[in-house]
Picture 1: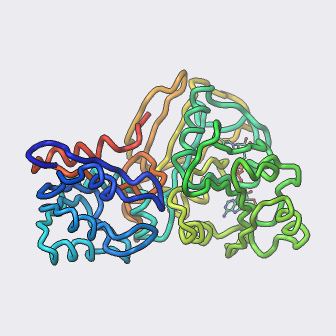
Picture 2 (picture 1 turned 180 degrees about the vertical axis):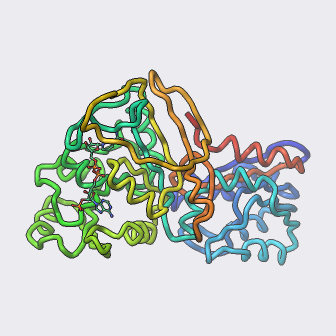
Length: 371
Ligand SMILES: NC(=O)c1ccc[n+]([C@@H]2O[C@H](COP(=O)([O-])OP(=O)(O)OC[C@H]3O[C@@H](n4cnc5c(N)ncnc54)[C@H](OP(=O)(O)O)[C@@H]3O)[C@@H](O)[C@H]2O)c1
């Protein structure tokens, strides 16, 4: 911003693309000289897939940089701020921090804990059931909720299910219509022993999205070879004392591969295990306005003892509720951040005036739309 006017704006569209600072500066051109730059995350001072932002800022003659959040990435942490100060740029930190934390919650979680930000989606009846009985595919919510879930997938790097959902529902879990993204969208089936049926649809359309089977060393070799022949990847994880996939290990591996966010669309067994392991950051309930009442074998949704409710909204005839499991707040190493998903590290930058309110409004405007 210069003289109270926005002279350039930008956001980081995807990993590998120009950072927000470069985009805003390019747009501002010569008007960047003497301007103030507002950024959600500390500008980087290293050469990664893109050149250092601090160099571009100094070269453009920007006089002042207002940074909402320090970048916890080990390659950046404090170095960007130091480089700017060394070059004589006036630096201010902390304005708009809450909004920036929310916008970047998946990136921050992965960079601070190594684990992706995990959203658990549960479609349930008013009386808390997810299926008429175990082993039966039961449509619960309506078409608008299904469309919402498909959009949610676009916002995540990974969609994950347990092998029993693969067996019973046989979902494709693709983003429809197809959507181009920088981090290839990955479908993960958690299958400790290789029970996924050879004909499962998720194994047979690797062009729409890649499939990864997370398993343990008990998966028979022949099954592993067959899965690989079908084009799926097999990831051998550590196992728990009960022989099942160690979910913390699985998520750590996904985080290490650069996946920032996971949408879990599993049944109650895997959902409960993720909750028990405190690996869930946020829950999305889709609640249908119907009851199963006295069905003796109906499959109950996982019970969540305490959650802070962050958002409630109607979706067609269903109700969407977004919440944060309370236990996350006290879990060591977990980063507690509210609502909404983020496909990748999001940066926003604006070259502009000294209005503090303006910088936080920018961050909010760039947040993905909530439902
Ligand atoms: N309404 C909804 O939101 C919704 C969503 C999905 C599914 N469903 C319904 O739910 C039913 C399936 O649910 P489900 O609970 O039986 O299956 P699930 O949660 O999808 O899958 C459970 C399986 O995952 C495997 N797994 C691997 N590692 C695990 C770990 N550490 N902890 C827990 N599980 C692990 C286990 O099989 P191994 O031991 O063989 O590895 C386990 O049996 C179906 O009727 C489906 O239609 C409803």
